[in-house]
Amino acid sequence: METLKVLLVDDEEEFVSTLAERLQLRDIVPLVATHGDQALDIVENERPPVVVLDLMMPGIGGLEVLQVIRRRHPHIQVILLTGRGSTQEGIKGMRLGAFDYLMKPVKIEELIRRMNDALSASKREDP
Amino acid sequence: MNENRSPTPDKAFVAKITAGLSHEFMNVLATIRETSGLMEDLLALNEDEFPHRQKFADSLASIRRQINRGMEIGEKLNRFAHSLDQPRERVEINDALRQFAALMQRFMEFQKAQLTVELEESHIEIETDPFRLQMVLAACLEYCLRHRADGGTVRLQAYRTDGGVAIRFLSPSDSSPPPIDGALLEEQAELQEALRSLGASLCLIRTPGKTGLDVILPSEITTPCVP
Image (cartoon, rainbow over all chains, first blue to last red; front, side):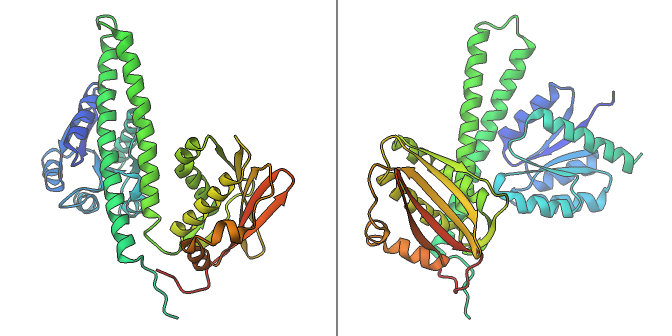
């Protein structure tokens, strides 16, 4: 089975590094970014097929990062992770081409299921 | 008609700060949740070798329960903060009543009473001020609690009416309640103002052994917004 490489983007450093460790224990290769610019650099260098992106970040925001990724690399699928108060932003993100959006907190099994769905979609667009 | 559809600066400030802090609070809980999840993962990997395995598992389950509780509280707070965002918006009444019951849960526990939400009609939507609606509902609930029999349950219901919706509070009562004007409105100018701005009225229900109130709300507010 192919190893899933995923970029996790969240400004909550402890949250995202712990999530990365949990994914690693499940044989997923996580890449971590804690701000938008770093996320875009990693996308250019590593081309992960799936990105899990927090919407509410200081500096370059999640929606902007989403737009850049979709414009430069349409096959990369972006899953948005939003807080409960950010439903409208999540809907806006879907309109801008996000693969899916999930509400925090999300169970890790559910997150992995959506990441695998996103990986399949990425392969379809860039076989 | 000069309609002001923005909240007042003081309300907007409270809403902004509360929503921001509740978001931060949820981030803290999300991090604790992932950390305890990682500990659970590691425990599952080394089940046989781990000393005090059961104590650890029980403690992690307790942490998970409290995180879930904290997240529910954070969500209530966040929704409450966002109810200040718009002085008028489309509100689904069943959803609003469930949220109201959730907000009141702690107060009800202190009163050794229960609030049950009995929703029979699906999707009742009106245009109203979500924040002031909660203020009015809270005042009506207090009235019912003051006049209920000991240990009573307050039942909350909603019905469609020709012009909008009626929200009904019902509680068991040993005595006939005083008129609304005397008991509920006289000392509460703010409540009167809230009712007026919602275009709402109150109706006392007197049935043997029960006290109740109907809050009659129009399907939309026709008066200018009161900031």
